[in-house]
Each structure stands twice: as C-alpha cells, then as structure tokens.
View 1 (cartoon, rainbow, N blue to C red):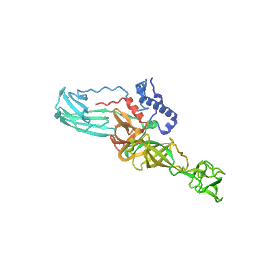
View 2 (cartoon, one colour):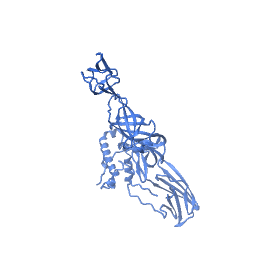
View 3 (cartoon, rainbow, N blue to C red):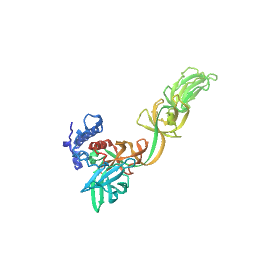
View 4 (spheres, rainbow, N blue to C red):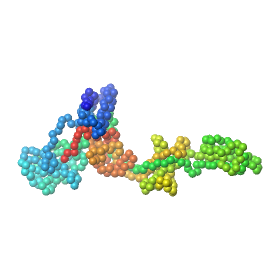
Amino acid sequence: MRITISNLIINTKIKKNTLSAISPLKNMVKKIMKSTLLNFALSSFMVISASSLTFSSQVFAASTPQAEEVEPEKGPHRGRMLREDDFAIELSIFETGVPPEFRVWATEKGQAIKPEQIELNVKLIRLGNQVDDINFYVQGDFLRGDMEIYEPHSFIVSINAKYKGKQYKWQYGNFEGRTKIADDIANAMEITTDTVRSASLTQTMKVYGTLTLPNDAIRNISARFEGEIKAVHVSLGDTVKKGQKLLTIENNESLLSYDVKSPIKGIITKRFAHSGEQTKGRDLLEITNQESLIAELAIFPKQLDKLTDNAKVTLNINESKEQIQSQIYQMVPQVRQDQAKLVRAKINNLDGKYNVGTFVSAEVEVATFDVPMAVKRSGLQGFRDFTVVYAKIGDEYEVRMLELGRIAGNWVEVLSGISVGTEYVVENSYIIKADIEKSGASHDH
C-alpha cells in the first residue's frame, strides 16, 4: 500500500487568512498524518511496512531522505576514512571501556604515519550552533581527543589537519535523533513544548480505604426520668438542630411532662420511640452528625517506613474528579488481619454529599524536595538504550539522552543530559519519534 499526500500539501508560507479558508483541508491532513504516524510507531505490530508510506516533503519533516546515501568508507578501526591525494586519516569514536572519544590514525600512500607528525583539530557543530572544540595528543600509534563526545552524537564534523606543512580540511554531517518540522505543521499536530526548569517535587504513595464516622458523631437519646412518651416530634431521616425538641415525656412519679432536646446537630438515623410507650431506660432515638467524616486508609508493612507524622494527603472519593486535601492525624494502634494499619484523615462534609462506607483512594505525601532540573513525564520516549526527551531549537527537534533521578507524580528529576531553559516536547512526542524512526538516521561512528 502506498499513501501519497501530494494533493494535500500545506504551504508553510501561506498567510493566516489563506489558511483559515482551507481549514477543512488542513483538518483532513492533520487526521491523515496523525493516524499514519501512529502506524509508524506501531510498525512492529503491523503487516504493512512503514517504508511503504510516502509523504510530501512540504507536508511533513524535512528529515525524510530523498535519495539513497552512499555508505562512507570505513577504516580498519571501523572509523570514517577521509582522504585527500595520498594523505588519509581514519576518524573513529572509541567507547570501549571509556567515555566516547575521538581516536585518529593517519596514513600516507597506505603507510602509517607517526601521530606526532600531525597537527589535528576537530570541531563538532551541534544543533543551535554549539561548538565542541577538540584537540588531540599522542597515545601509542594514534591521536586521542582531549574531551568526551557526549550524546547525542549528532553534529556537523569539521576537521582541520596539518601534515608536512600542508593543510587538509574535511566536513560532513553525522546526525541521529534529529528531524525538522515546520511550526504550523507542529501546531496542527498538537505538538506542545515546555522548558526544563528547577522544581519542587513531591513523592506520594497510593493507598485505599473507606469513609467512616468520627467517634463522637453519634448520640443515643434516652429519657432522664422514666415515664410515658406523650409525643415524638421528629421522624426518621429528619435533620435537627442542637437544642431542638425531640420528645415529650410524662414523668411516672410526678405526672409532670418534660421535653427531651437534641444535644447536637444531625440527622435522625434510628427511631425506637412511639407515643404511648414507656421509656423503660432504653434508647429512644439515634442522631448522627455527618458534617465531618473520617477517611480510614490502609497502610501495609512495606509502606509504613515511608509514612511521616502529619503527612499531607490528597483524597479521591468514589473515583470522582474532585480532589480533597487533608492531613493524617492519627494511626490506629491495632493491626488488621491483612497486617495493614489504619491511618485517619478528616474530611469536611458540611454539604452532606459524602456517605459513610464510600470507597476512597488517596495519595499520601512521603517526601518533598527541590531539584535543579525536572521534566514532565509525558515527554519521555525511548531511543536506543536511552530515555530521552526531544529538544526543540527553531523548527528542528533532537533527542536529549537523560539521566533521571526521583519520580514525583507527573514530573521526574533530571540529573544530566539537558540544560535548564531548554525547550522540549511534552505532548505528542511520539510523532517526533515516529518521524525520526522513519528517516532511518543511524548511530554512526
């Protein structure tokens, strides 16, 4: 199958008013491209080869090769051969047992040249015009670069050599993990970016539990003096105020009537009294105040050492979108049969929308720390054996291999591999990955 979008080209120089006139066409292109690129990302699961899909270079990334490139000549050390007349050097990135570095061997008419006879400088011009200036010193039968070649190995290589008074110059591109996408196309594909920054991160642990009542939430109402119940002024389910009249009772001894009033605000949750009955020392009503509830959360043995006193907690009740902030104030001393200990956090329920017995999930804070660099986890992708984000410089995107630290919610600490202030892709980074994989850029030494 061959898909061609040559009839759906979006000219990146079209003015805004023209683009608005063809917005239906643009939306169609967006849908086609988005689904096609997703197919690229899933190519290992598909029968259709990703190489069979063709894009107009004006529609998508400029990294798509237009012609098959000639494989560069390799030397005996698997480095790149660079020749001029009878003089040749082999430039190799060596990384066995050491951080990646340049090593160079030189020949004249096929015969090895002593390395001390050569002056050599290599400049690596990276995306954004950052230049690594590498000089060389003699080691054994080769020249060794004086600095590490850090990832990504994606740059223009500019070589200046001097031998027997003659200058030799070479330059070539060595790109990997890089692609180019016009900004209007990136916007249409909803590729969004953020900047690497310092952050205050909070680690949490997930726990579960249920809503219960506080110990003082229930009042059982009985008569102070035994007698006959003359009137019950409330019904099951009624909301009562503190001091509200609940019952009228006639004292058996004095035959005088008195009122029983509510000691708290709440709801009549049980009723055992009816007119004409004797009180007989029993409970007549039950009143429950549900304005405050308790989230009882189960903490299992492996989690206990992470728990701190008065830890902050974010509660989600019955899988609703609403989040409630609270704090753990108490740990139940007993252990349940499943070896979990219960901790308690209060919930305001003045509006009465939460009910006892409802399931609760919670994120309990276990650590808060400041880091000099952090990125959003939504931007992370895999590239070779690395976890990467895609840095954006102008309209070009390139991998940044990250060394990651602690994870905290939607963020992750970055230890190295990128700089503060770098713009990087946070949403739909899979599109960048798919286009880079489509272009076939390799890790060439």
